[in-house]
Length: 107
Image (cartoon, rainbow, N blue to C red):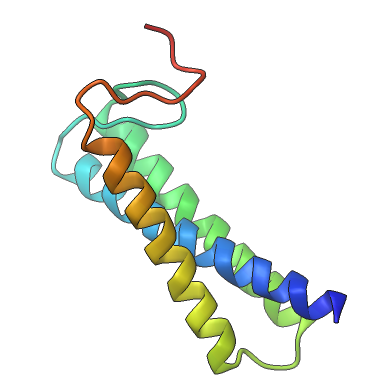
């Protein structure tokens, strides 16, 4: 049971990483600055790298998930999509504020 919950958490985090990587990579390859965990306004190169890192982390989580469970089932896929939807909605709310910043960003 505990291993099953760990699998669900990993699937959720995997979806969040996939979804979080999309805007960073997109902004970066289009030459636009965008907020990252490093700065309120990070360069396009930092955004491309951050997007790729998110996708790499999602892949590592996928490998870890596959090593813990026998097969990636429909419920894992639904939870992965749920993680992506959750982070997408949270980030949409954050980025809709013109004064948005993460707690550790300085003024």
